[in-house]
Image 1 (cartoon, rainbow, N blue to C red):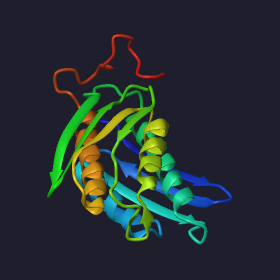
Image 2: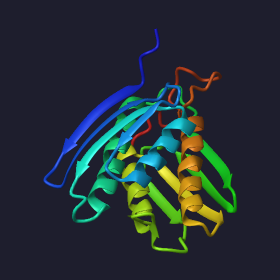
Image 3: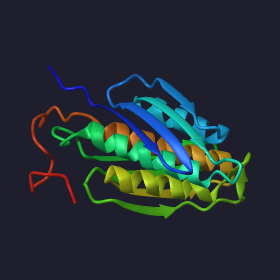
Image 4: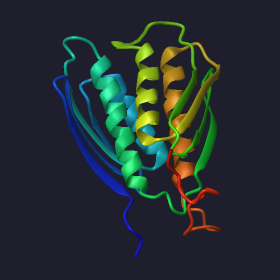
Length: 200
């Protein structure tokens, strides 16, 4: 019987309390309650298009700003992804997606390598989407990539509407993750690395 690729992690600091439950082999069922409406919307898109079952509950110091909560959700989601992947045996490892959303076009490429890195080239035409600062998206993706141990490149090819730009990035990442974590039917029992391990 296949081992379930799931994880549940809670992280508590003086600034936030985050709980994430993740199943990589889900159907896209998402419950997001971070106190930040737009972030909930993006997490729902991420889980739905990656076909992850995902629950994110966050309580943070939103009276200050959204920075700590957004970054810490990225941290814990990245940790959950890393734990759910285990030794990464049998995964495809690489994923990429060029995703359109109206006038926006975003490209995501990932390597589940054990070597954390974020290459970010996503300019925003305005400072906020709703009440959320657009500069926080880079913080979220960096926190996720570094805690998951993945190399992540996100590039905006076109787009002016900040909502569309952000959503295209999240959905492009989702489709890339869906591809990368899938079991490779040609090599279901091996770690996809000449080193035999996928760690830093």
